[in-house]
Image (cartoon, rainbow, N blue to C red; front, side, top):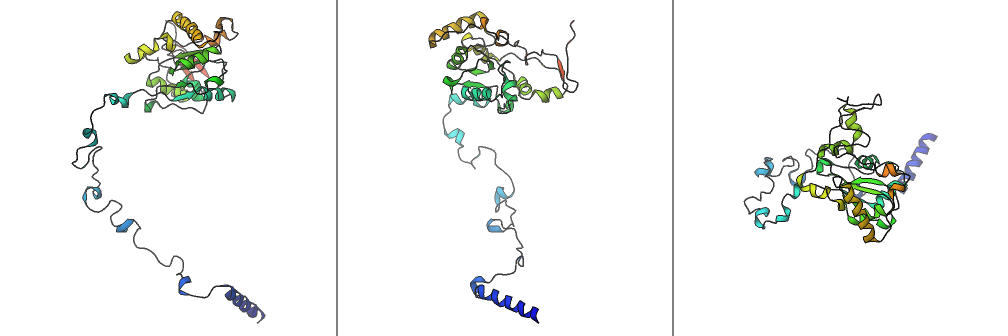
Length: 287
């Protein structure tokens, strides 16, 4: 009896605190009502999300650019010649000099070795997508005045101010072209070495890129070295700084290290095979 009395007292105490039973607070039990149809817009799921009648319901999608009989957009407006071939133009993702300096200061990049596409991609913070027509990196002049590193770097495009900033610190910059297959290899060298295939040759630049990469002002990798030496001095006079003598630098070998026009990796020749499991390099036999 004592137990029943305590239970009734607790129930009465609970009823005193609860609100009065009214129409506004009446609710059905949870999950007591089930909806027979899926809640998809006005048709309640009968049309399976494809609309009502017509080509939309039959999943007969119109081709891109078709405007149901109207004059399409690309015919309503006049032809603009500067759009010709825009979908095939080579893209160069930008890297600012400020970001490059941060990568060096945080030891993401080792400046005691030459810097190229493989070095930048192996930093873990930069990526290259050759499938999206990205043909390398472009070094921009953001953070130009704060760049203090002495480096030997190879990029695909650089302005005159960027070249002056690198050479003012005693460094060397070079612009070089890589074909799509070479870019795939440099973007992820480990994946290529795991295939067990020899290193291929780099292709020469196409006709519309030959002029840029043979120009000493752009520090092209196909330019005459004597012309590059003259342009280094001309640029130093133009920007008003004293050109450091690379010949007297303790890192002379690193600063003057350059790839062959057919070479992909520093220190690895085309035709060599890198075995990551055995940690060996299989070289071509001299004939």
